[in-house]
Amino acid sequence: MCTCQDPCSAGMRRAKSSDAQTPGLAHSSGDWFELPQTIRRHVEHALGSPVVAFRRPGSVYGSEFAGVLELADCRMVFAKASASQTLVADYQVEAAVAAALPRSVSSPRLRLSVSQGPWQLLCFDAIDGYHPNRPWTREDLTSVLASFGERAQHLDPVPTRLTDLRTIAQLIAPTNKFTVWRDLAKGEQRRVRLADLPIWVADRVEQLAALESEWESAASGRALLHFDPRSDNQLIDEDKRAWMIDWSRACLGGAWVDLVTFLPDVAADGHPVQQILWIIRWARTLPRTRSTPIWPLSPDTGWMWSVSPTPLHRGSTRVAQRQVR
Image 1: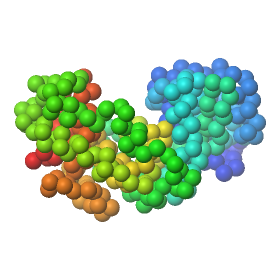
Image 2: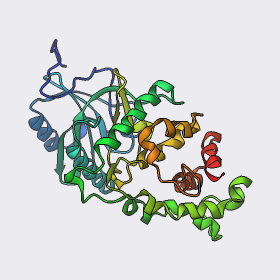
Image 3: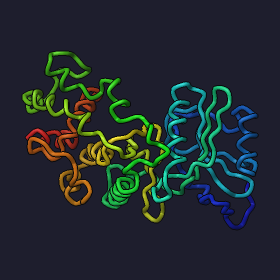
Image 4: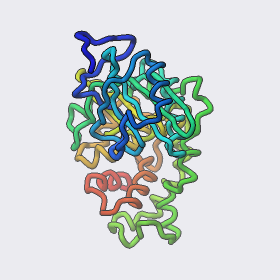
């Protein structure tokens, strides 16, 4: 174990061994010492210090390996690795984005990206923080909303090195996630049926379909989007600064999109979404049509309804109710 009395800097943020967190994988079971030896040697050589301890984070999703590495010189880094073809592709996007992010954006700094055989491994600064509490507290929400404004300011337009990144339409259109209302309006079946919807929704499916049909043009733009701003992809440190992690879904679009896709989470916990939009000055630039201030939520709520195994939380339905009035 590390015996340093003072944190070693070397440009890396020191995390408390008991608190360091980062994006990860709730179902990961791999141990650092079970990774291929050639990868472990590469990482230790590149970081300039051997790994003396490994700790799994409390909540992370999907890779073969994820956790905090403690180095002999007392530094800590978060590492994750996978040999899955799909996750490797995600990690490559995440590495490219992380390497291009300006320091003005609160996101863990990428320290190392290793491609070896079928494996892809990423190392980031370990952040001493916690995932926002659910239901959302006013304090955590204030921190996270400030980070949305930070990214809207510094990532629009996208950093030069990422101008060729996929657009939001290229990422989403092939999945048919945002065609739910139009499919239902045409009588086609999705995982949700028109008969399963509340009357106030079913009676307005044509209107929702019309709003949904405009999402690609409305969401276009040259801002860098995270596009997966769930609470478990955010960390709040002791200074109440919110850090965004896991940029594997990054794409280009309108600067307001991340905030709008985040709002259903907030509404589900009873917070006043429209008041939030009004308070945040830059959010007032949201595209408006048919006197509907948050109409871009239409495709997002349609998709949520189609994949939810149970009726949506009443907080989420309040968003849609306001949207179609």
